Amino acid sequence: QNAAGTLWFLAVNFDNQVTITRAGAIPPLVQLLTSGAADAKEKAVGALCCLASNSDNKAEIAKVGAIPPLVELLTSGTANAKENAAGALRKLAFENSDNKAEIAKAGAIPPLVELLTSGTAN
Image (cartoon, rainbow, N blue to C red; front, side, top):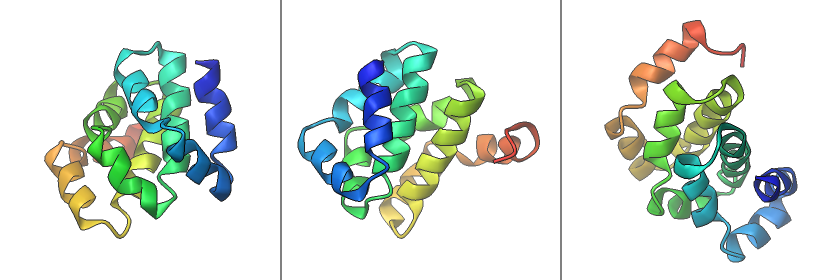
């Protein structure tokens, strides 16, 4: 959990995003989305949201199965996890038609619409 939080802060920097991905952090971060405690999930989704800013990471994040647990967090996560899951999905969808299709197929649209009225201000 502390490692995921530290990676989240480091992933704000583009050069660090590349280093983090090369070090193999994406699969364990995705694993935390399904098996971690609520606080660990928040930190993992925050790190993935930052990592998804890098277009080279988008396919890798989707390939290791991040989209279904990100969609799940839209309804089951803490307020911060919901906000960051929506942000991660937005970044994964940006200029990536495969991810757009997978996100819709995973059922993200209804919970995203629900967050418009019940979610955080962000």
